[in-house]
Image (tube, rainbow, N blue to C red; front, side, top):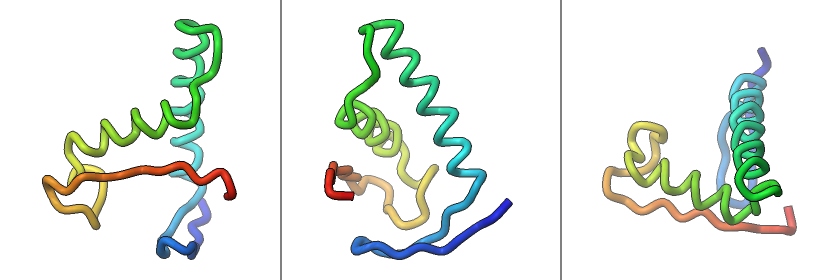
Length: 80
């Protein structure tokens, strides 16, 4: 499994095959749930809202750079 460093305007970090594969599997299941319920895939804002809800519930469980009680704000940038 490969791990690679990356850098964006927002910062730097590490990513690799494992987290990408895990996200892909999770997003596929969520997309299917939306398809079953609404007859469509989710909108980007719906995915980000759900992810934000999970992280905001217990940020330190998932992230090393967010303090407990600190709000996490996710945003869309279609220019990526």
